[in-house]
Length: 127
Length: 387
Ligand code: FES
Image (cartoon, rainbow over all chains, first blue to last red; front, side):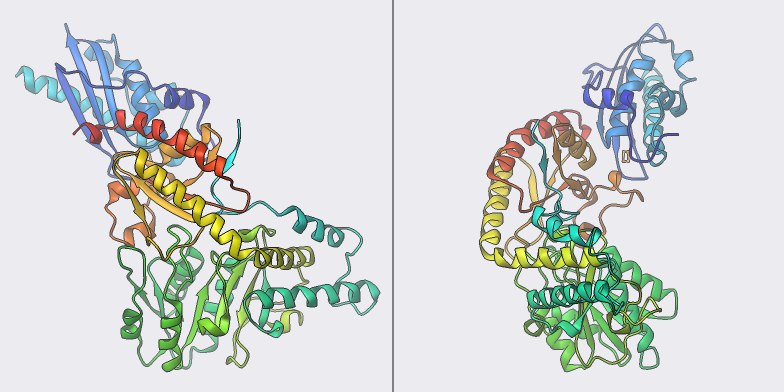
């Protein structure tokens, strides 16, 4: 566990150069989730073909940790099968980022929930 | 990269002349002012001089100044000191919703210990209405404590009007003037206060030293720290000599150039405010448009989150602070901005720029150059912005 208030180099890298920011106009699944703890919002867009995430983009209104986890999760799910990404939890994302300050762990939950919500939307759209 | 420090309401750098003045007392002049030999006597004289200077800047008598271990201790001494001493008389205290935590949490502590506290709301500028204070008074009110100016938004409270109400009802009035000292002319008689707290490190003095002004003739005030006879028995413990000397020097410097410094800071502050308003859309001022500390500018940049802005600025060497929930340890948004009725999302995007003696025109220009593209970049990332 890192000291409170200190972001790892990995987090800072994703914060400064967030990957996959933006929106997919013809997304197959879109998930919007809010963070009840501090009121932040994340929106995740997925492009899915043959049960595979071929593209992912995000928009996030939140702190450094929220932005870094959003960016990281898009990296983690891109190119993966839906079955595989169901295994990804906020812990996976946090670990991939080299840890988060204790009081920022809740921000990574946002990313996990966004994936769930986007997949749900995908299934609903497909019927 | 040039470092731009714009967090002077949090703390200020030590003035080089203050440091100079302090050094002998950390070296050869190490005596204990309570000692009767030459080592002690030499230091005692200096402490007396320091007390005169600090008293001078607020128009008090030296005998009315008690040195403390900072602003928070001064607040605690004033509030608990009165509460404990007057508990037979009453147990009701009036304060505001936007006090510094040193006052707010002291009141909450008393609340858990059998006192009744009224937290007066504020208007959208963060100002307390004197008539609300008058209305809150009851037969058992023993103390009114309302800060002089707010550290987050800079709004200056109508202290004179509140003190008049307190005086008419014979109630002790305390004000936390930590943010105002050295920036605004303060006179205890003019303000009509009974008690007042100040701190050294907000005006380029050292940390860990402050003072409580206690008006002559005030009824008993319980000390927080019992022990020796220092500070007229109101605060035991061997004096923080170097700190007190540094504090008095900081007061001396601040009062010598207060007027011109005030004008200079107001013009820098307004340049920053106008520049940001011009260059960035959807910004708003948090705080009173005119009744505000020369040092303080709090603005919300809508659709973005403050911690994100703050870290981006930090990466550019610019230090500011934010009222966003994300940046507070408790994940609660600023209690001050909440009390002003500002919507949560807007509080989220708040930044506080607080200026000090070292800031220059170039500092402001640097912020004006760096912040607009940061806001633009972060807004592009925001799901609220597109909608
Ligand atoms: S999003 Fe608010 S603390 Fe991380």
